[in-house]
Amino acid sequence: MPFFDSHWFGLAKIGQALVDKGHTVTVVVPVVVAKERHAERPDFHFETFEDQGTGERLKEIQDRYFTVAGTMSLYQTFKLNIPGSVYITKHCDVLLGNKDLANRLKKPQYDVVIFDPIFPCGAILSALMDLSVPLIAIFRGDPYFLGEKATGVPLPSSYVPFFTSDFTDQMTFAERVQNVFLSTLAPMVSGWLASKTYDGLVRKYIGEGHTIQSVTARTDLWLHRTDNVLDFLRPSMPNIVQIGGVNVQAVASLPKELEAFVQSSSKYGVIVVSFGSMYRTLSPEKTEIFAAAFARLRQKVVWRYTGEKPAGLGNNTKLMAWLPQNDLLGHHKTRAFVTHAGYNGLCEALYHGVPVVCLPLYGDQPANAARVMARGLGMKLDFSTVTADKLYQAVIHVLTNNSFRETAACLSRLHRDQPQSPMDRAVWWIEHVIKHGGLPHLRARAVELPWYQYYLLDVSVFLLSVCTAVLGTVWYSCSFMYGVCYSQSSAKIKSQ
Image (spheres, one colour):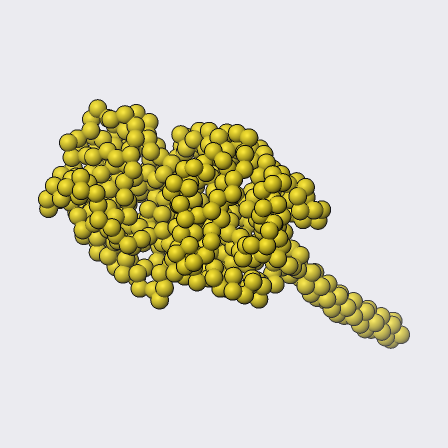
């Protein structure tokens, strides 16, 4: 039950694939969104609960966050997230405290529970339902870093960049210093926030001795939305499976009106512009900047936007409240993609071999844009300082520099050349978990080790003690022998 639409879309597509394979999929959602979700996915079964207005309050905090995203420091971002944790706690509390819902979910009818760690209340709900039911996590980023501890995977800061930074796997000394700082401090702070937000609820509904970390650690499978072609390589575990690009579908025909607009682009082609499911509108100043830049292009522009029509909008630009993004990116007329660097959109661009111009805003988007730059798939601009001329020049550079198109085509071929599609892989692994009732043999022993054993501090202390004892013994023996020899020599001299 993720709050972000992009997360819901990804989970829903996997759920639909499971339905198509004959499974029954039940989704837990607040009453206020149940009608909308059911209209989107009529094949799902929905269990609902009254969220007492907490969902709406979280939506307001989320919207306030998005209005200033791209201009805040890491500290400001964390500070803004603290009020949200209060309402997340209340939202989770009313969900877990709904006894009628809990009784319905406790019936022995579910083979697996799937959750997104961005809202780890799902892990608590799973434990409340039945601890014997396998648990699966599907995620792109883990804001609480629960997965790192739950899988025991080591992430060396020397070449694994912090997941929200714009560092690459080839960092300078200064960047490695910053990366060590971020990779050490952020998990500590986020772990404290996760504990503050959820541990009380875990004790209340599951029992003493349990924490949000312990209920998350029972996860059997981690379906990670990453891809080796686009993402930087990092250590993994057998129960971590990559499904990056799971949202990409076969290209369908465009609606007639949109197809006619695309075909009217002649030899110049089309530019697709979208800032995802959250950013349907921009500030008036940014809107005019974008409109002015697009108006200078020879290409046609299809822009997902629902605000007031910009005064400087060109005749070549079509505004749409919703657009078939995957189908547009897969169209042979599409030349480039202007995006906020959301992972869903980048996977679609990667699959279809479309160069991109990134204007990252928040979360993992700066990191995604860094990957685009490192792979040669496109360019990155600073959203807070972008001008019409900078945007226009960036789009023209991507269009006229053949290296971007050639690189995009090459990466697309690599990404497509897999024994299974990401969706087929996700479904196979979920069914594998269901078939065997969990995969405990794939969990690393590291999850159960105390921290001092994991880092071998007890062994280090023992070896240091042994070395100290040996060196001390040698030193004492040498001192003693020297003293004896010195005494005998002195006595001999005196006797002579």
